[in-house]
Image (cartoon, rainbow, N blue to C red; front, side, top):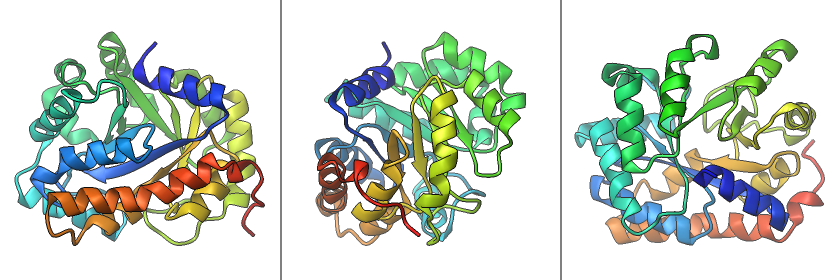
Length: 276
């Protein structure tokens, strides 16, 4: 089993929900990335989504856009991102790491070269926001050959036919975008997302996690009621933005994530009413 499969199997056996924090590589400083990754794992992260800085992050709101700009200003690119994962793997061989970003930095290397380098670094999956599934065959084949899952996105606007196609192609897990918009917006409606998530989970051969708009323990619990796990990004990035040094960034990551982990583990997710 892959690290992603093993982690979700263990969660399923324990009746727990996955907590998937997102952070931008190279932010709040270039040297903070690996310490923060370790801090997130220690605070209960089941999968770490590591954002690859990009100049035009079209799916991201202002918070993650700014974090990407800061990282790029420090010279952080794909090579540095893979280096962070390699460094992380020296101490942590179990926590899955998924790169989240855009097609261009991968396409420049080529699907085969990127997949090989990612696998050697210890990357478990990649989510490329602007890679349509209909154009992903070459990437899917190269990734699969090197044991890297190509994580796909499903949206509220996805048709039933597209949902079925996504499920047919899914690997690792499916990422359900809880509303039509960019990351960090403040209009999460877990009740509205619940029906779509139920259909998707019934069809999907892999776990389904939900993201966009999850910012605290309450919103994580509400969304987890209908999903196999939740992704939290903008709120975590914001919590670390003004960290004074690497140690402070790691401490802020723990302080932010620990209440979400505790809330999910308390079983509230299976009991909480949906938001109105």
